[in-house]
Amino acid sequence: MPEIKNPFFETTALSTKAVHADRHLDVHPEVSPAINTSVTYAYSRKDMKAPNYGTDQVYEYARYGTPTLARVESVLSTICGGYAVAYSSGLSALGALLNHYKPRRILMNRGYFGSFNVVQAYLQHHVGSATVLGLDAEFKEGDFVYIETPINPHGEVFDIRYYANRAHAVNALLVVDSTLAPPPLCNPFIQGADVVLHSATKYLGGHADILAGVVVSKCPDLAKALNKERSVSGAVPGNLETWLLLRSLRTLELRVMQQSKTAKMLVAWFHNMAISPIASEEENKIPFGTIVQVRHASIQKVHPAFDVCAQHPNGFGALFTVTLKSREQALAVAKNLRLTTFATSLGDVNSLVDWRHGEDPTTDPRQLRVSVGLENIEDLKNDWRRAIQASCVSSKL
Ligand SMILES: *Cc1c(COP(=O)(O)O)cnc(C)c1O
Image (cartoon, rainbow, N blue to C red; front, side, top):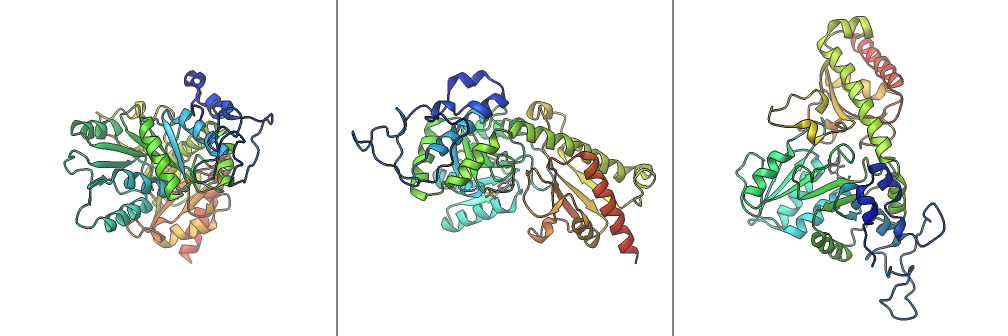
């Protein structure tokens, strides 16, 4: 098989990598990669293991790999600065990592509830021999330290370097779920992560039309081992998903930068209304006290030792939470919005608002989770203002 990474792109910028890094794997003259749905590939006439796709690629059966999957992994490896293995979902990627390392102790922050469910399922298979702890526990050799940053649902950040230092001091592994801050927002390897995980269903896919995940490692041998295990488990993304992911990665930087920028402006607007009666009542005709709180990394107070700008040189992502006065008001606003769809998921080109309490009862029922898409900022503000005003009128009746 050819090298998945083309050394030429090591020194190019992110957008160039995202558009071109897989070109050396392309054996056809089409400029846009073909949609290839085949599960099986004719053997070479020479020999069953000889190249049958161009001069240096061998494909046999889709569970072991496909040409489009190789191209997606080439782009992901190049833009994430490691060796990427793609999965059928973000959670199957996490499951694959746990099955690979078989840790006895998992130390994690409580972010996305689905990740916690995967850990619980793992513990059920290792009753008595494995346990889950919080990040304040003392780290020990062989620990699987798993931090989600920025964290779901409110998008605040954790200091990757701090946890990397603690983990590496005792020979523990640091895995970072960087779903909420894909390239170019954060590269957790710079802060010392050993392994990076993304749910590609979110920003990497970005269009609410694929379920996929990726594990990126600094170590080619780990990627090789995961690849082999994936051929056994079958947790590969499907052919069409793979093609859609490749298509989506081309525009990753533009999408993520713009979404992040719009989110920061929207957060500042909400935050102003939460702290200033003038901003709330005079500027937006919303009774002061309606917006109780806004949370996002752009307004987070961090420990002075945490170099948050070094970890996030290009922004904090497009996910934040806004807390309203009551559970009823939060639901009324979510249902009233027109440009922000009341649905779960995040990172898509269309803005989404979710009432997390419906899925995760540990979250505040007055809180809405907002994922900002690519709509215009003024249109989004007008829509939110109208929906909140309507919820105030209806709650007075
Ligand atoms: C969505 C999400 C996942 C799970 O990804 P799926 O692709 O839905 O399996 C994991 N981590 C975070 C932070 C997520 O937001």
